[in-house]
Amino acid sequence: MLLEKLPQGFLPILDENHALGRTSFEIIEALLEVDISTFILRNKNKNVEEYQQYIKEISSIQDSMDFNFIIHHHAELAKDSNCLGVPLTANSMPITEARKLLGNKKLIGYSAHSIDEVVEAEQQGANYVILGAIHPTPKPGPHPVLGIEKLIIACKLGIPVYAVGGINATNIHIIKQSGARGFCALRSIYDGDLEHNIMKMNLLWDGRGVH
Image (cartoon, rainbow, N blue to C red):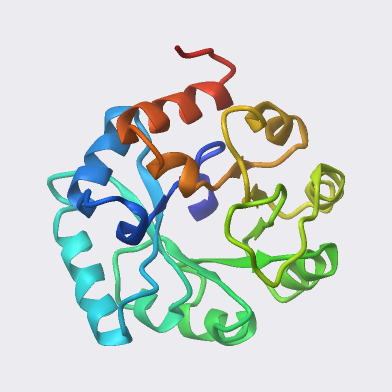
């Protein structure tokens, strides 16, 4: 099944805008170094044409660097890409339209911010959801902090759930205990030593300590 290509654990967000000068190539190298081979590709600062070219550049190195990626938000760009699929948002095309466009050869996820949205996404045919924010984050936003109890509820609904929002080394074990398939992270990757952060987050999910 295509869903098996999504990790049970760490699903990082590759976003050069947060990478403090590190290139996408360098970030992918760091991920592969600790056997993380699937990530979400995101860049909100690029227009559609620029993002399409960026996707082509990432795809061009897949032969020499064995990895899979998911395109954030843009289902129309996922159709002819080598990506696994797309996580949609409230500002993307509807899940049902994306399924018509992509068929069953691509995974369709949805960024949910409530239990109701998780249920609706599953009913509309999403393969997985990214639910958050679970914990407070430094960046204020329109979405409420859900907390671990709502994550636990969502994980019992059947659809695979990835937790996002304020996830770091101190709370990964709680996320895993919730029943989540995995977690997404952004600031906890790029704030500080990139390689060390990636290794630490990955090891902590696996239940292994790191110094």
